[in-house]
Image 1 (cartoon, rainbow, N blue to C red):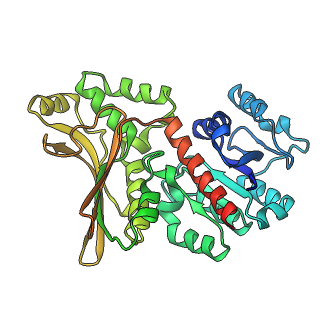
Image 2 (cartoon, one colour):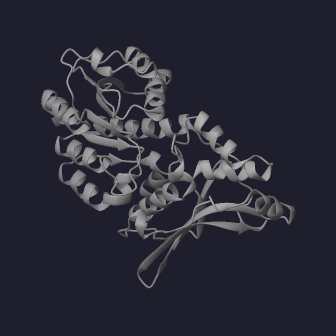
Image 3 (cartoon, rainbow, N blue to C red):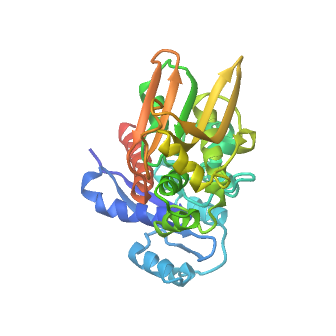
Length: 354
């Protein structure tokens, strides 16, 4: 059986994208496909396009030493992510037509409209490329539109890394739960807030806990999306849209972050055998879905109580299987990068089945 070569376009080249590139190399012997990166587009470090393949070791070195990627391009010029996608879709039209072109979108979440990620996904699909993304914006703001577009051009739009890193939440339901209706869910799905609350229990200051997550490359330089609850709200909207068939954006999710949570209150709750956790939930009421993100004080009997530090968990309420739980006992860059790799492997599997 042929081992397909996939041409990858990386839109965004932050911590997750660079870990993804390294992971592809580390796992090369385990994969039934090969890859070449033909384009990289960044917001602040320029872009590079090479239809024959980019030297990714040099690209990573340039980026991490704050040099522009334009210096690696034979035709350096200012280009947006959409420009890069369209240029490569035109230049590799045969690869795109044969389903071997994949856009990997890892830009930072925009909580207002999900842009430019939504437009990146749309442009990629219009150019006959498959799309995988760890960005929550496309599924949280435009899932139904983008999924319909993907189906109309017979391409894949995957986003397993958008929620709970590499744990297969969406694929679990899509691939293993036929005829099951998801009536709701409840979980801890923001790693930064989970870590901060665990550290507050130990007496660590809020700012120090945030800095620790930034040092690991998990929290952004501006952590407000995490601590204000927006990241969890975006994940909640994505889960609602995909698993429950509703149409919701993060702005429809009732939201309270953890900036108002006091360390003394967290430790007092722990002393009483309880824990404070940021909980995301959704439920269906009379055909309507309601969703919220807020700190909750959990009893020992709560399945979310035992989660610590970098743990995440999601419990799905279903009509036929009852409650199904998914627990991740660690979370980080490798797990998120693996989600991209797993989505890419499923695209390769599809190509081999044709």
